[in-house]
Amino acid sequence: MIELKSFTKQYGKKTAVSDISFICPDCMITGLIGANGAGKTTILKAICGIHYPTEGAVIVDGVSVEDNPANAQLNIGYVSENAVFPENYYVLEYLKECAYLREKAGSAILCDKESKKNQISKMIKLFSLESVLDKKISALSKGYRQRLSFAQAFIHEPSILILDEPVSGLDPLQISEMRSIIREAGKTKTVLLSTHFMQEAETLCDKIVFLHEGNKIAEGSSEELCRKAGTDNLEDAFIKLTAATVEM
Picture 1: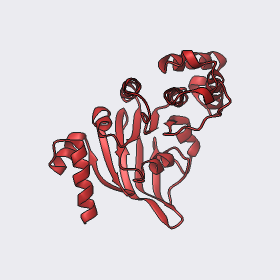
Picture 2: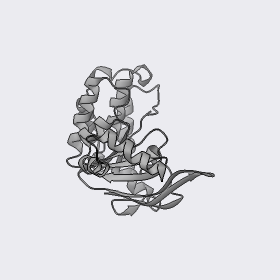
Picture 3: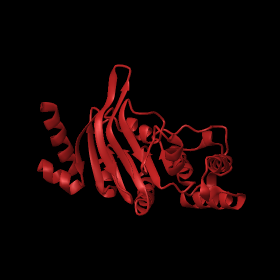
Picture 4: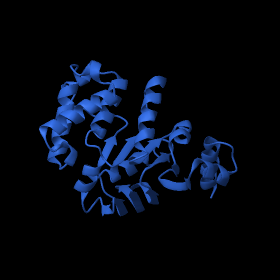
């Protein structure tokens, strides 16, 4: 489970996220919806221990990320919107390096040579990377780069997945494939994803959190949010609830 308690993040005098609290339950997919600059990535990075709250707390599986970032990093798989790779690595070489680093970080599923080999093979098959194993990452298309980003996030079988705009830049077939993988992961893992695509949120998410300019404006299922806003669809609900917040 993930829990944010009065989470606030400031960069100098600028407040990126202000006093946000919500819970991401186990075995469910929670979506963060907001326009660019709403604070989605700031929240995701704090959960992963990339940075820490200015005020409040982020709790992962009962442990404060700030007090024990290693716990979060061991139990989380993170897919960023624009993943940064070692561009001169070959794809297979990179997967082996990821498995090695996760082993050193304490991953039980990657505890020996055979287990690492098995997990790498599993990721290659799951994300259809067979045809690019001998290619350098620098030569990969956007679609294959995103597949590789998913592979590194899943390789240690984390209990929590953090996905930042996971299907951004993919073609319709790739989007369908990735959504199927995310949906399946949500049956056994805690999944938190950010998106500005309402259809994606309606399709995938059990729970949705609306963000606007660093503030939480509403949370609930798609049906609950539509009912609260008095609308027939999630997009109209977001627009109406956001407008009501701005007018206050």
